[in-house]
Length: 166
Image (cartoon, rainbow, N blue to C red; front, side, top):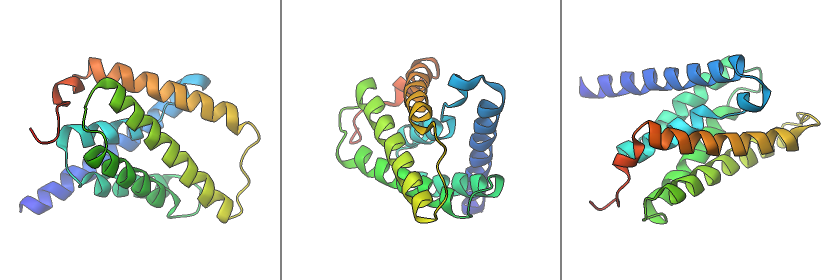
């Protein structure tokens, strides 16, 4: 029964992350619509819960993005899983000091990993990337890090940032 509730909670959390991403991209004007809120929430969930199950949550989020998007099915599942797996590994083994700067670097690495793997998979499937990708990536990078910085303090995430051994 606990496993069923755990899976249901993860799926509902993934639905919430995807809905917030859709709301963000649909209702905010252009520079602010590039905020990758689902990746921010995945990283902060990883920081709060400190468990490897974040990769499964990323899988569910990727599945819901694949259902919603018009890209080849499986792209978002792969990209979210790779990005969160790599970020969790860095969080667990490399970033032992849990300051705001370490979390922002972790967020930047997660975003770069996400975009690089997404671009690589799109390149392998011969999908044309739009022409103004560099300005979009710049706005996405800057706005996502600023939003993560604000959510860190406003959302009270700083309470959960202590070394992993404690």
